[in-house]
Amino acid sequence: MPEELIRRNREWAGKVHDDAPEYFEELSKLQQPDYFWIGCADARVPANVITGLQPGEVFVHRNVANVVHSSDLNLLSALDFAINGLGIRKVIVCGHYGCGGVNAACEHGHGHGLVEHWIEPIRALARAHQKDLGDLSSEAARDKLVELNVRASVNRIADTPIVQEAWENGESVAVHGMVYSLREGYLYLLENSSRTA
Ligand SMILES: [Zn+2]
Image (cartoon, rainbow, N blue to C red; front, side):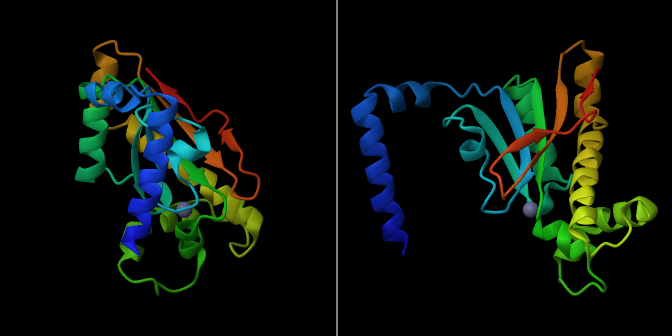
Protein backbone atom coordinates (compact mmCIF):
# COMPACT_ATOMS: atom_id res chain seq x y z
CA MET A 1 0.00 0.00 0.00
CA PRO A 2 1.25 3.58 -0.67
CA GLU A 3 0.81 4.34 3.05
CA GLU A 4 3.67 1.94 3.64
CA LEU A 5 5.92 4.20 1.54
CA ILE A 6 4.90 7.26 3.59
CA ARG A 7 5.62 5.40 6.82
CA ARG A 8 9.05 4.29 5.56
CA ASN A 9 9.82 7.81 4.30
CA ARG A 10 9.04 9.35 7.71
CA GLU A 11 11.25 6.79 9.36
CA TRP A 12 14.15 7.49 6.97
CA ALA A 13 13.76 11.30 7.02
CA GLY A 14 13.48 11.23 10.81
CA LYS A 15 16.77 9.36 11.10
CA VAL A 16 18.51 11.79 8.73
CA HIS A 17 17.09 14.79 10.68
CA ASP A 18 18.42 13.29 13.90
CA ASP A 19 21.89 12.60 12.48
CA ALA A 20 22.32 15.85 10.51
CA PRO A 21 19.70 18.52 11.25
CA GLU A 22 20.94 20.78 8.37
CA TYR A 23 21.02 18.00 5.76
CA PHE A 24 17.77 18.61 3.83
CA GLU A 25 18.05 22.40 4.10
CA GLU A 26 21.56 22.29 2.55
CA LEU A 27 20.59 19.76 -0.13
CA SER A 28 17.51 21.76 -1.15
CA LYS A 29 19.69 24.76 -2.08
CA LEU A 30 21.95 23.07 -4.62
CA GLN A 31 22.11 20.10 -6.97
CA GLN A 32 25.78 19.45 -7.77
CA PRO A 33 26.29 15.79 -8.69
CA ASP A 34 29.60 14.55 -10.11
CA TYR A 35 28.08 11.76 -12.17
CA PHE A 36 25.40 11.23 -14.79
CA TRP A 37 24.29 7.60 -14.62
CA ILE A 38 22.55 5.82 -17.49
CA GLY A 39 21.43 2.43 -16.23
CA CYS A 40 18.82 -0.29 -16.50
CA ALA A 41 15.34 0.22 -15.03
CA ASP A 42 15.66 -3.16 -13.28
CA ALA A 43 14.61 -2.71 -9.63
CA ARG A 44 17.74 -4.55 -8.48
CA VAL A 45 20.11 -1.95 -9.92
CA PRO A 46 19.40 1.35 -8.13
CA ALA A 47 22.26 3.76 -8.93
CA ASN A 48 22.57 5.43 -5.51
CA VAL A 49 22.42 2.18 -3.58
CA ILE A 50 24.96 0.13 -5.56
CA THR A 51 27.46 3.01 -5.79
CA GLY A 52 27.03 3.98 -2.15
CA LEU A 53 26.25 7.56 -3.19
CA GLN A 54 23.99 9.92 -1.24
CA PRO A 55 21.00 11.87 -2.62
CA GLY A 56 22.40 14.76 -4.67
CA GLU A 57 25.56 12.92 -5.73
CA VAL A 58 24.37 11.24 -8.94
CA PHE A 59 22.01 12.41 -11.69
CA VAL A 60 20.13 9.38 -13.02
CA HIS A 61 18.43 8.18 -16.19
CA ARG A 62 17.20 4.59 -16.40
CA ASN A 63 15.42 2.59 -19.06
CA VAL A 64 14.92 -1.05 -20.04
CA ALA A 65 18.39 -2.57 -20.70
CA ASN A 66 20.20 0.82 -20.65
CA VAL A 67 19.73 1.23 -24.40
CA VAL A 68 20.76 4.53 -25.97
CA HIS A 69 18.55 5.45 -28.92
CA SER A 70 20.02 8.46 -30.71
CA SER A 71 16.60 10.12 -30.95
CA ASP A 72 15.39 9.44 -27.40
CA LEU A 73 14.27 12.92 -26.36
CA ASN A 74 14.03 11.87 -22.73
CA LEU A 75 17.65 10.71 -22.54
CA LEU A 76 18.98 13.54 -24.73
CA SER A 77 17.26 16.14 -22.54
CA ALA A 78 18.75 14.59 -19.41
CA LEU A 79 22.20 14.37 -21.06
CA ASP A 80 22.05 17.99 -22.18
CA PHE A 81 20.99 19.15 -18.73
CA ALA A 82 23.65 16.98 -17.07
CA ILE A 83 26.49 18.38 -19.17
CA ASN A 84 25.38 21.92 -19.94
CA GLY A 85 23.12 22.62 -16.97
CA LEU A 86 24.74 20.80 -14.07
CA GLY A 87 28.28 20.83 -15.48
CA ILE A 88 28.75 17.09 -14.99
CA ARG A 89 31.91 15.72 -16.62
CA LYS A 90 31.62 12.00 -15.84
CA VAL A 91 28.96 10.01 -17.68
CA ILE A 92 28.50 6.35 -16.73
CA VAL A 93 26.64 3.78 -18.79
CA CYS A 94 26.00 0.78 -16.56
CA GLY A 95 24.58 -2.55 -17.65
CA HIS A 96 24.13 -5.65 -15.54
CA TYR A 97 24.56 -9.38 -16.03
CA GLY A 98 21.26 -11.25 -16.05
CA CYS A 99 19.50 -8.27 -17.68
CA GLY A 100 15.91 -9.19 -18.63
CA GLY A 101 15.98 -6.85 -21.65
CA VAL A 102 19.12 -8.51 -23.01
CA ASN A 103 17.68 -11.97 -22.31
CA ALA A 104 14.51 -11.04 -24.23
CA ALA A 105 16.66 -9.96 -27.19
CA CYS A 106 18.31 -13.41 -27.16
CA GLU A 107 15.06 -15.31 -27.56
CA HIS A 108 13.51 -16.53 -30.79
CA GLY A 109 10.50 -14.69 -32.15
CA HIS A 110 9.34 -11.24 -31.09
CA GLY A 111 6.88 -12.14 -28.38
CA HIS A 112 7.56 -9.39 -25.86
CA GLY A 113 5.22 -6.70 -27.21
CA LEU A 114 6.19 -3.05 -27.42
CA VAL A 115 9.53 -3.56 -25.71
CA GLU A 116 10.67 -5.46 -28.85
CA HIS A 117 11.02 -2.05 -30.54
CA TRP A 118 13.05 -0.75 -27.63
CA ILE A 119 15.49 -3.68 -27.56
CA GLU A 120 15.88 -3.90 -31.34
CA PRO A 121 19.46 -2.49 -31.21
CA ILE A 122 20.42 -5.38 -28.89
CA ARG A 123 19.10 -7.93 -31.40
CA ALA A 124 21.08 -6.12 -34.10
CA LEU A 125 24.23 -6.35 -31.94
CA ALA A 126 23.64 -10.07 -31.39
CA ARG A 127 23.37 -10.59 -35.16
CA ALA A 128 26.50 -8.52 -35.85
CA HIS A 129 28.52 -10.54 -33.30
CA GLN A 130 26.91 -13.91 -34.02
CA LYS A 131 30.27 -15.70 -34.51
CA ASP A 132 31.78 -14.34 -31.29
CA LEU A 133 28.73 -14.97 -29.18
CA GLY A 134 27.84 -18.48 -30.33
CA ASP A 135 24.85 -20.08 -28.63
CA LEU A 136 22.67 -17.23 -27.33
CA SER A 137 20.98 -19.47 -24.79
CA SER A 138 24.25 -19.79 -22.83
CA GLU A 139 24.96 -17.52 -19.88
CA ALA A 140 28.42 -16.69 -21.21
CA ALA A 141 26.98 -15.41 -24.51
CA ARG A 142 24.37 -13.32 -22.72
CA ASP A 143 27.00 -11.84 -20.39
CA LYS A 144 29.07 -10.92 -23.43
CA LEU A 145 26.03 -9.34 -25.09
CA VAL A 146 25.38 -7.30 -21.92
CA GLU A 147 28.92 -5.91 -22.26
CA LEU A 148 28.55 -5.27 -26.01
CA ASN A 149 25.33 -3.39 -25.33
CA VAL A 150 27.09 -1.17 -22.76
CA ARG A 151 29.93 -0.46 -25.21
CA ALA A 152 27.44 0.41 -27.96
CA SER A 153 25.57 2.75 -25.60
CA VAL A 154 28.83 4.45 -24.53
CA ASN A 155 29.69 5.04 -28.19
CA ARG A 156 26.24 6.36 -29.03
CA ILE A 157 26.42 8.81 -26.10
CA ALA A 158 29.92 9.89 -27.17
CA ASP A 159 28.69 10.46 -30.72
CA THR A 160 25.78 12.71 -29.75
CA PRO A 161 26.11 16.34 -30.85
CA ILE A 162 25.86 17.23 -27.13
CA VAL A 163 29.08 15.40 -26.20
CA GLN A 164 30.83 16.21 -29.49
CA GLU A 165 30.13 19.91 -28.95
CA ALA A 166 31.39 19.75 -25.36
CA TRP A 167 34.65 18.24 -26.66
CA GLU A 168 34.91 20.89 -29.38
CA ASN A 169 34.64 23.46 -26.60
CA GLY A 170 37.52 21.83 -24.71
CA GLU A 171 35.36 20.34 -21.93
CA SER A 172 36.81 17.26 -20.23
CA VAL A 173 33.69 15.12 -20.52
CA ALA A 174 34.36 11.38 -20.21
CA VAL A 175 31.96 8.51 -20.90
CA HIS A 176 32.67 5.21 -19.13
CA GLY A 177 31.12 1.75 -19.45
CA MET A 178 30.42 -0.29 -16.34
CA VAL A 179 28.73 -3.56 -15.59
CA TYR A 180 27.13 -4.75 -12.38
CA SER A 181 26.94 -8.30 -11.14
CA LEU A 182 23.60 -9.07 -9.48
CA ARG A 183 25.06 -12.21 -7.91
CA GLU A 184 28.09 -10.51 -6.36
CA GLY A 185 26.88 -6.97 -5.79
CA TYR A 186 30.08 -5.72 -7.46
CA LEU A 187 30.46 -3.05 -10.12
CA TYR A 188 33.16 -3.45 -12.78
CA LEU A 189 34.68 -0.92 -15.15
CA LEU A 190 34.55 -2.30 -18.72
CA GLU A 191 38.07 -2.37 -20.11
CA ASN A 192 38.76 -0.03 -23.01
CA SER A 193 35.18 1.22 -23.03
CA SER A 194 35.87 4.84 -22.03
CA ARG A 195 35.50 7.66 -24.52
CA THR A 196 37.19 10.99 -23.95
CA ALA A 197 37.92 14.00 -26.14
ZN1 LIG B 1 18.35 -4.94 -17.02
